[in-house]
Image 1 (cartoon, rainbow, N blue to C red):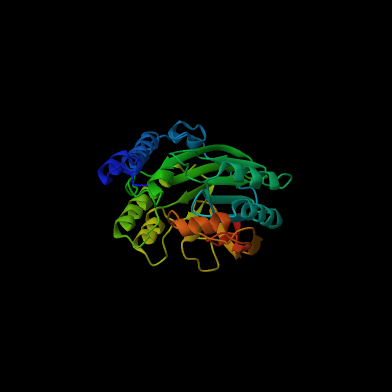
Image 2 (cartoon, rainbow, N blue to C red):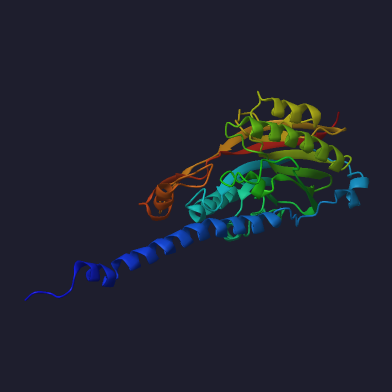
Length: 347
């Protein structure tokens, strides 16, 4: 049987070309909509990134103009700094790691703890719950910026007040995959009463990461100048003092030397460290003696491969972090440090 339809009429009535055309138009719209939506989200997030919800007006403090009581007798404090790498996207196995970190802190029984990168609220709740019943019964955070700065101070002794300085120096907002600007980095201060008398000004900081970028090195140099100025103007007269944190700089670097000389700082570690440091703040009538320093680290079994990134993950890395097989992970990509420090009256 011979068909009466010509090839021209077949082409005209075949829906395939029209369907392909509609698909192309849909893909173009999606291709335009996704970056537009992402740009809108980034702009909205940036508008709120300047917020600082932590107290900043430390000059209003009555304690600042009231000298601390004298230290009646020597006291030995166990001081911890630890960047716990607890953030969305950049790390995984967070709950397992913070649980292990909390149990280590219980065992170590420190007096003062400065944590960095404690970004995720649900994981902070796990860590705090694991510490229930320990001496670390007091805490303060310093909410700021879009994702929070991740600074968290824990104390075995009462915290009288707390203040925060957000660094004015930072890398640009558009370096989204680095995240430093979005984290609102700065320095937090907790004024802590010591048992038996005396007090401690305890500072916790997280400075700009280097990432082999000279611009970031210049940013951090400015942050170290800000740190020196904030400490100088916020110290309580007569109080002992410590500053801990992830300084992201090494003892041979210009910004490290600037911080040590202008603040000034007295290193309170008996072991070398790379970028995480514990310092004492000299004060008239007080002497510090570092009796020993311990590295805090370990490895645990985890449900997914242990990955720590200094940037947002690529597609394959993300798949591995979310769906990869069980493995083993370090507690953080930073070692923590505990220094045992004796403070005594005297010149």
